[in-house]
Image (cartoon, rainbow over all chains, first blue to last red; front, side, top):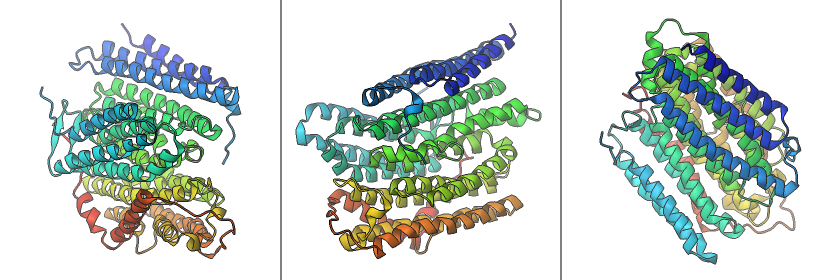
Length: 103
Length: 488
């Protein structure tokens, strides 16, 4: 199987994620966009491992993907807590409202 | 394959301490909760002993992923020393604020475990895990003042920028894996060196990986989070972020730049050199206009990161002498920077605690109100500027020395910018000094109560700043022995 398909999918997901972070103002949607970018990385890693380096004895690519899944879960857990705390303090999770400090 | 437990003993000691702290926090009630601070300090000292024992030994474990050489030991001693200093300046701050002491110390230790792993990591996977172990507790610590709008805003900004840069870094790492077929740093260097002229896509991925660490060290243009985060975070956390977390970022950056991507040094070195120029110039120019001392220190720490990026701009593929000198210069600067910057934050905490004062105007007349703190702050600021007889001067000389190992046009440009920026930096450091000694003390100025621990830490750091300024060999004799290329 050619790796081009999955790699294109990963690149597309990554770009959608970047777009979401730039365009979305809702903090939860920004978090979802970040998750999309991380999953694009996972697709990349698993594709490379399975299609280009199937003989790698350490299975580095897939192990790396597993670590990213675990760390991303921890990260989003903390992120949601921060968003929740922000909501309790100012009743808004619009990232544009977070502008008490400038320069 | 057996695990070399002595090699990871410092990390294990800190992990055990972290669990003990959590348990102690559950068991202790009321005022007794502040005892978690000495427990943490004790664990740190144990870890420090285990680290010093490792000096001079080259230990490799976890299939070559984890290497303890002299370079890593110096970094670990730096981190653990910083942890002790941060503990000293946090005690009263958190004991009186009564917010989440157990959680704070637990998160602090966890972040430092990540930092201890960073200089030993010789694999992209371990570097990523170490980076996240530093970052995730830091996100929480910044937002520890739950009811404070500034604190939650600071953690939100820090989190968004941090997660975004990690996503970019991971994408870069995945592409590097795709090109080279390994995540081992030395393996990547071998694969890149063996191949034909590198693919543009590989070069882009290398830069993405470096971006991830650029965020951690707050280099321009990834610096926007730093001033807001430092200003909103509890002050000891800001000190930790400005010093330890930045040093961890440099440790990771040295690992990827000087080991994995060393064959591509002629691509990333000029880029990082330009970033160094931008970082120090922009940091210093914006610092000129700050009225809040913490924001001034934040921009000054951005500028200092710029100085520390200069040696990266000198790197050349395959030139071991130049690269070693560059790594040693960064290492020496980081140690000097840790001593003087933690001290400056310590004095800022002494002034801020109980009073909430933080603008530069509030330091007016500090020389009369509390001569010890004023003298200490003067020493730290002069050292940050690079005045004799402080360690800051020798830190800058170390960088210029790295430039002179093999003089190139670009190296001279970088050194020129270093000198120009040092002059700019003096104007805002001296502004604070002038306010402290020449300004009249306000009539209703509150009496400072720094407390014993904070005073002790500040005095030790002040003496260290001067002592290392007179005898820089105390550090450079050791840092000059290190070489990051020696890793298997």
